[in-house]
Each structure stands twice: as structure tokens, then as C-alpha cells.
Length: 332
Image 1 (tube, rainbow, N blue to C red):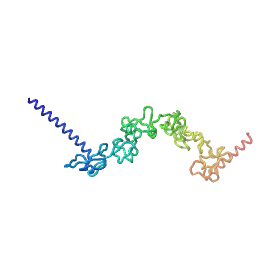
Image 2: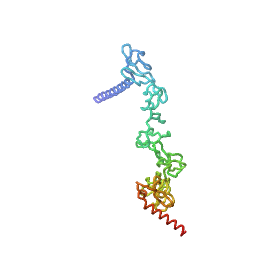
Image 3: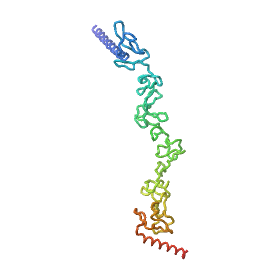
């Protein structure tokens, strides 16, 4: 008998706890559904709401009609509005959030905030990130062409066999130099390359010896280099020597070509053989087949063996020319 009584008391307590929890839960829900606006009749309430829980002796609170939600509420004001989805008319952004997510906005109609996008698979708004950047879902990984990459271990990644383009906005089927391609994106993994039916180096660059990279071509002698190809693209007969574009031994660079080097008093066929640059043609030139200094010419740079005291050089040049003349007359 005592056990029965104890069981009944325990069961009664249990029912009471459940009832109280349900009552508290309903009260909390009711608190969220009603405004703070007190009323006696429906006319005391704003649009799309009515006076709830009132009678002849009790003041009620305004509550939204069926199909409307209490989307704004403070101590003095409230709004009852319909929830809206993508493209539907709205008054405030709160109408859009339930269907489009926290990045939704209302600009007469529901849409996504600037720099966010609507994911077609769930219709909600998401922020876009670049490939290899942090992500929470595949929806963050929208690509430039409107397709989506995959959010793997918190990072946007391309599908197997594809790689991010240089700007990390597109997944591309990578092509190596010399392979067929359809656009520059496929070649973009190799710096300074373009698609011209096949992947090749852009103008101003040359393919490396192992055909894996594009190296900058030299446009002047003494430009830095790694391989000979850099020195021969725009410089005729140039070679790469100790990291700089130069000429073979016995030759020097003049403008964009290598010419045979002739010193003052040596035989020549053109004035560029006597000087390393056009600026020094006024200092020395090829006269009568011999490199000679101009009268009174000097070269402060030391690149040409000319100075104020050039009489010995001129005499040597004259004697050399005279010897050549005699040789031609009596020997040939």
C-alpha cells in the first residue's frame, strides 16, 4: 500500500514537472509572438495584427495575424510582415533572412548583399572566397564561370586533375608548354605564357632549356640571364656568361649584335669594331681599314684607348696603313 502511494505521488510530481515545462515553453513562444503594444480592441493594433488575450475586464496585447510574422518589436513599436523569398517584394531585410539567410538584404525586393551570391542548391546567400582560401561550405567556392569548387578541410579546392588559375578564380585543365590549349587560363600555371593554339611563352620571353618555364629575354648586353636562349632572342650571337649577356671572346656587343673587336691601330672593316657603343663613334672610327682615334679625342670612360696624347697612336696607325699599301703593291 505504501509503495502504491509513493508511486502515485512520484507520478503526480512527474506530470506536474512536464506540465510546468510545457506551460513555460508555451509562454516563451507566446512572448515571442506578441508585441508590447497593449490593446482593448483590434483597432488599437497596427496593420496585420489583432488584439489578443483581452476581454471586457482585461487589457490584451497586439499579435500578428496568421501568415504574418512579428519581425520588428521594441517597447513602443512593432511590425507584422510576411516572410519573403528571392525576388519578392519586401519592406525590411528581416523579411528575407528566414529564406535567404543572414546575408540577405531588402532593396524593394529580397536579394543578397553586395559581394555575396545566391547558392542555387539551397537558395540562400553566401560570401564568395578565392580558391585555396578558408571556406565553410561548397557555396563559398563559386568560380568565375558560375560553377563551384569544393570546400575540403576548410579550403576551397578544385576537382581532381584541375588546378587554380593564376588569379585563383577558376579551375583549369593545366597544359604544359607545347601542349594544345583553348585559352590563356590553361597556360596560366606557367608564368608569362599564353595560348596560341599551343601553350607558348609570351612576347619578350623564351622557353627554358627543359621546356618547363618562360625566361625573360635580354634586350641589352649585360642584362642578367640564366641560359643562352635569353641572350639570342633579341641580341644577335649573344651568349650567357657568368649571369650576364655578352659575346664570344674576341667580340663585343654593339647595339643589338656582336661584332669583332679591334683596338686602336688594328685592322677593321667597320667603325663599330673599334668602339663598344654609338656614343663613342666620335672618339674613334675605322679609317682606311684601321681603327683610329679622332684628332684630339678623349674617352673618359676608358673603353677606347684614346687620349690627348694620341700622336704615337696616329703614327703607328699611319705606319700600319703604309705597310699594308706596300704589301698590296709588291706582294699581291
